Structures are given as structure tokens and as C-alpha cells.
Picture 1 (cartoon, rainbow, N blue to C red):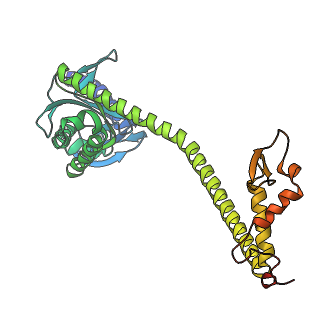
Picture 2 (picture 1 turned 180 degrees about the horizontal axis):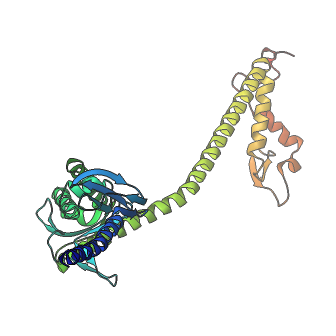
Picture 3 (picture 1 turned 180 degrees about the vertical axis):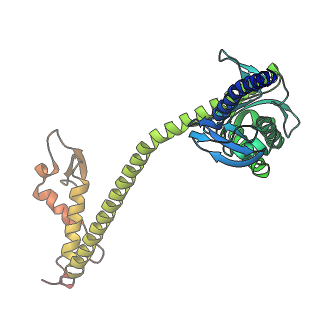
Length: 346
């Protein structure tokens, strides 16, 4: 009887042990398989030490506590807002901390906000190089902002120097991340806003910015007007130059023609001085008296000049008496054209 009772107790123990082993085996199998998403990487540790990194897919490992898996969203773009925050409804508010308040190089206080986009590039460094890498990244950004803004004036910080400050802060942040790798890659960094700490100062700087914009507008308008007027002015100048060149060429040709005419007259005069002198006298007299309406009366001892009647010309009243007046014209050494001593070339 006693042996039967002992055997019954043993069978009861085995009956409860087998289900327990099956449950433990099921839990071990469930913990041994894991799935990694497309946007993640999984870091495997064995007894707390790094073993390997898994990409997306279904994988197997030893159950805990032998091996553990740490999933990291390496392909997800994350953001960091310095100096402000966005609530659930999408509205932006100033942060309560003092990270955004920065002292400029000319000892002024400015409230400057930055927006940083980043992602995890090294999951191992992200997990094991620091305890709170996201918080360290925020401290690095605040330190880079203060070191750069501390070398600028408040005018540069609020108006014209924002792009330069943005680029210098990005370079500083890159340097800090290379010196202290936490497994983070910077995607983009922008200045969201920069304002003075008080409304009065802010209004004054807005007026300065408005004046600068008006100045740029006036300069652009002046350049536009200049560019619209310059082609017409250049065209007018070219036209004047061409007219001047044409006038110059005409005057030169006219002078050369007069020169050639005088040379020709001189050559004729050197050959036939009396005839040439008389011809010149008559041509000059005809040219001078062509527009003068006069009658020369040579009937008395004195020559009388009378005005012609309307429609008459000197040729209409020219007679033998008036023709004799030509004999009264005498050139030097040529008073008598009949003198043989003055005849040449006949």
C-alpha cells in the first residue's frame, strides 16, 4: 500500500513538471525569433556585450538573459527645436528654458531659435557611447549657437548675418560630433527666428530691416531705370558720333575740293595772268552783284547808282556805256590790258 502511494505521488509531480517545461520551452522559442522593420536596425548583445547588427527581416537569437536585441530607428528623420516647441495642435510656443537666449559680441541679449533635422547613423555608438544622446545633441547645438553668436553683433544676428551664423553653427556642430561621436548624422540646420528680448527693441530692428528693404528697392528701381535708359542713350551717342564723322568727312572733302580749285586757278593764273585776273574779277562782280538791284549811270562825270525796278536784273540794263566801266578796273601792273608787256601765252 505504501509503495503504491509513493508511486502515485511521483506520477503527480511528473504530471505538473511536463507542462511547466513545455511552457518554458514555448517562451524561449517566442523570445528567440524577432523581426526588424525597414526603418530600423537591430543591435544584438550577448551578456551585455555587442555581438552584431541586423538589417530588416526575420532573425533568430538565444533567449534572454543570454542575448538581448535593441532596435534603433536609423532611417527615421528626427527633429530638434531649440528655443521653441510645437504643441499637439501645430502651434509654436517659446520654450521656458534659457537655451535660446544668447549674448552677442556687443553685449546684447538676443532670442534665437534653431530647427535641426537629424537621424541615427551608427546604432552602436547611439546605444553605447553615451547614456542620453538626444539630450547631448541638444547641449551641443546650444553650445555651438552661443560660441558663434558671441562673435557677432546684434545687428548681424537680427538682420544681415543670419545665413552666415547658420552656416558657422552647422560647422561647429559637425566639429563637436566628430570629436564626440554619438552616432548622429546632421541633415539640415536652419535659423527659425531671431528677435530681441523686448518688444521695443524688436520694433526698432523691424524698422531698420524695413529701411534696408526700402533701400534695396530704391537701388533696384534706379538700376532698372538706368538699364532702360542706357540703350537709348548709347544709340543716340552712336548716332551723334556717326553724324560727326560724316560732317568731318564732308568738311575734309570740301576743303580738299577748295584746295584743288585754288591750285587749279593758280596754275591758270601762272600761265595767263591777265585773262585769269579779269575772269576772276568778273566772276566776283557777278557773284557780289547777283542779289543787288542797282543801275550804274555813267553818263556824267560821276557814277550814279540807282535802284532797279521790280523784276529787273543787272543784265537787263547792261549797255555799251556800262560796259566801258570794265576798262576802269585795273590790277596792279595790269592797268592797260593792251600793253604787250603783260600778254602771255597768246
